[in-house]
Amino acid sequence: MAEHSGFITLEQAVALNRIEVRELHQDYLNAGLVTLLKLLDFDKRFVRAQGVTLWDSDGYEYLDFLGGFGSLNTGHNHPHVIAAVEAVRGLPNLVQASLSPLAGALAKNLAAVAPGELKRSFFGNSGAEAVEGAIKLARIATGRPRLIYTENSFHGKTFGALSVTGRSKYQEAFRPLVSECAAVPYDDLSALEQVLHTREAAAFIVEPIQGEGGINIPSPGYLPEAKRLCAKYGTLFVADEIQTGLGRTGKMFACEHEAVEPDILCLAKSLSGGVIPIGVYMATDAAWRKAYGSIDRAQLHTSTFGGNAWACAAGIAALEVTLKEDLPRQAAEKGEYLMRRLAELKEKHPLLKDVRGRGLLIGLEFAEGKKGIAHKLSFGLLEKLSDEYLGSLVAGELLNKYRILTAYTLNNPSVIRLEPPLGVGYEQIDAAVKALAEILERNRSFLGMAASGLKITLQGRRKA
Image 1: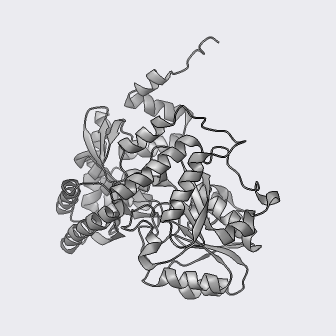
Image 2 (image 1 turned 60 degrees about the vertical axis):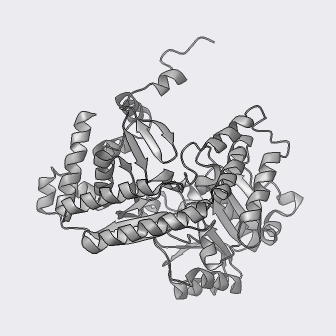
Image 3 (image 1 turned 180 degrees about the vertical axis):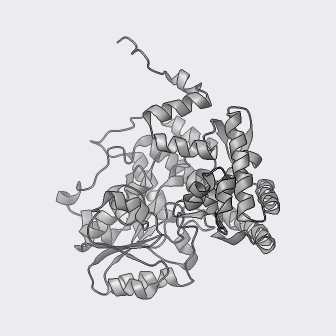
């Protein structure tokens, strides 16, 4: 077949420059997202990555303190994970009329490290898919319709996952959503029991730490008591550990900090070391058998690419790295060090309203300020940024002046996250703290932060 006129080859695609990439996205993908990233000067062309380090097309080196929103616990392109994928590339990747040895092995390995009696796994391709499968299993296993979730939560943007995501901005345009979904305040046991006591709830889905909500940690005892209440009223307890799992918070799973044993657990992000898309929900044998334990129900929930050989090989290798390098311990120790350094900054700078987190999942909340004159001084851009992207003012300065990649949390734009690979070095942590200290020293007010951030951003845009 003759080559189609206008096609871009793989070799040509890899060689595209920043402007060419921007134009392709403007014309064929999400033009609104292009505008936002251009506004923040976040559309840099990164061409190489290893460990905690990124390099752009101009040869500049960056520290990645975003870590793929928690997808890179083992770091960029970990050699052991890459080698595992290379080792299986000659195997059939997809053979539906068969049983995959790699899927079986990964499921067994996950059962060995998972909390409580979690045993059965179902593999998909993303965190949202894991949530979809989890809430479907809860409904079929219990025979109940209702799903309970928390305000300010984030579980994904596919239809079912969106229906249990606690921010109206993402839900409104798509209503009516899945029926029989009810939100309760996070960290509020009385509100939870009030909706559980009717015995209509199939599942209560909760993040052990709210990630996109702004790195919110519940009160001690909240999760164990929530699990006890769920058991009391016959509701399945679903832990969404998509962002918190696999060592991120200083334990293999965040629910282990209080010895909570979920009925269902959702994982994704770092399950493959950030190399290949994969997600999984795990369930106890009892819950699984009630849902899919018979032949006639065995294929009620399936996924074409779920459990493919390449993804499972990456998952096996990433789990090996997590254990061999003791990444949970590293996250605990380095997180404690980073939190201590950040707390010192908070004492000195009122603009830094709060520092919170666990392990290497840390949020920095900045104090909002009044707009007024600041809106005029920022050429009209400040109002647009401060309404939805306050954290981006700090993240933009970190990226464009100090070459440190971070981002704000989706449900709380006043918070930026620090979520580096768990093997991050102490010198790299010190570099990030020093950059933050300089930004705070230079900007004693919201207005100063806005003006400084926009100045640096606009300079970067002119250079691009």
